[in-house]
Length: 491
Image 1: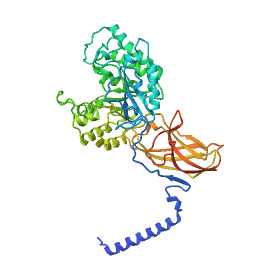
Image 2: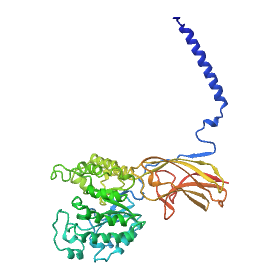
Image 3: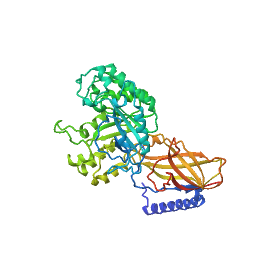
Image 4: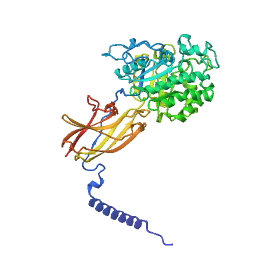
C-alpha cells in the first residue's frame, strides 16, 4: 500500500474549491438581477397595518337577551310570555349598553302561546316588529319558540291544553304535556312550518334555535323520545328552514345524530361558566368539567363549527359569578379559554353587566370569538388598461376561532372624484377558517371607465346592499366602511 501525503491532498482540495468559486462568481455575474427578484417589476405590494380594537361584526360576539342595544332592562329574563312591544320604544339616539358590549345580535326566547294564541291564529305582526326593531338597532334576531315552561301560567296555548287535558306529570319532570301524543308534533310542528314559510331567509333573522320539548324548550328528556316522535318534532325545522341557519341544543345523542344527518346545523349550550353551581347536590357534577367536553365528543360535533355557528348561554349572570360564586380573573379566564377551544361564535350573557375589573378579559375574548379578518398583504399591477384583466394576490389571516357563516362578498372599489365602480370577486368567505388564507383572483376593468389615477379600496360587503358590512382589523377604514389600499392607474 502506498501512503498519501496529507499536505498534498489539502493543497489539491484548496485548488479545486478555488476553481469552483471562480466559476460560480462568473456565472452569477451573467444572470440578470431581475431573475432573483421575488416581487416582479411593476407589481405594487401593500401591507396594511393591523389594529387591536374590538370589532362589532355581524353574527358574532355577545347578544342582547330579550332586548336590543340601548334598552338596558333588568337582566336574566327567561321566556317572554306576552307580546309587549312598548318596553322597546326607547330613545334611538342612544343605543349604548351599560357595562355590556355593543352587539349585532339580539336573542329572543318566546312562548308558543304568544305566537299562536288561537289555533291557526299567528301573531306574525309581533315577530315582524321584533325584526324591524333589530334592524333599527343594528342587530339581527336569533329566535327560539319555547313550547312551555314549568309554571302553569307559562303553559302551552290554552286551546292546546283544552285538547289534551290538565295532566302535567309524565315520564320526565320537564314535560308538562305528552310529546309522544301525535297531536303535539302535529300542532307545534305546524306552527314551526308556518314560521318557516314566512321567515326563512329573512335578512334580519340570524338563526332559529331548534326547540321541541322541555322547560323553555331546552330539550329536557329528549333522550326518552321514541324515534318516531323525535323525528316528527325535528322535521318541521329541517324542512322549513333551508336558508336561515338552525342552531340545536346538544341534548340527546339520537336526536343530534338525526339532525346532523339531514342538515348542516350549529349547536348551542346553556350554562357556560358552571364550575360548581350545583356540585354539592350532584356529587360534584358540573357543565364545564362533566358535560360539555363529553357531549361534544360523544355527539360527534367536534368539527361542526367549520360549517355552522356555535353559541353558549351564561350560567347565572356575571354579577352572580362574582358575588355568589366568588369567581375571580382566573376562573373567568378558564371559562373563556374553554369556550374558544370549542370555537364559540356568540354568547348570550342575559344582558348582565360585566364587572369593571373583568372588562380587559372580556375584550380579549371578543377579539377571538367568531371570525376576525386581518389583511396582511395585497399585491397588484400598478397600471392596468381599461377593458383589461386586473389580477391581484392577497394574504389574509383569520385570527378568530371560527369562520364567517354569512354570504358576504369580497369586493374592490375604484374611486376617482365622484366616479366609483365596485368590482365583486368570487371569494368564498365562509371557507376562511382560522389561520392564513391566500386568495388570488382577477376582475375585469370596464371598457367605458375613464382613464386616470384611481384610489383602490377593498371591503367585505352585504350581498343585498352592496355596501361594506364586515370591519377588518386594519387601519385605513373610510367613513363608509371601505379600506383604502393605494393608487391604481388605468389607461
